[in-house]
Length: 75
Image (cartoon, rainbow, N blue to C red; front, side, top):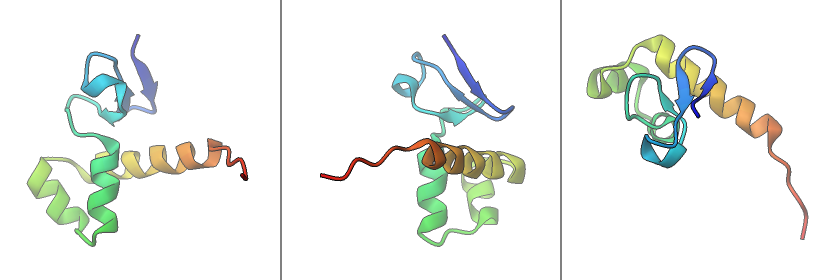
C-alpha cells in the first residue's frame, strides 16, 4: 500500500522500507531536511539531487505535519 502526502511525498514499503520520499525518486524527506538544517541552500539541493523548489517545499510541509502529530511522553 502506498501512502500519499500531498502530491509530492509518498511512503511505499517497496521503496526505502516505507520511509517518506519525494514522489518518483528514492530521495527521503529526511535527507532534504538534513541538508537544509546543515546550511545547504535550496538551489544547491535542487542541483545536487535534481529536485524542484516545489519538491523541497513539499518535504518541509511533510516534516512539519509529522512533527505536529508527534506525541511526546515525559519519562
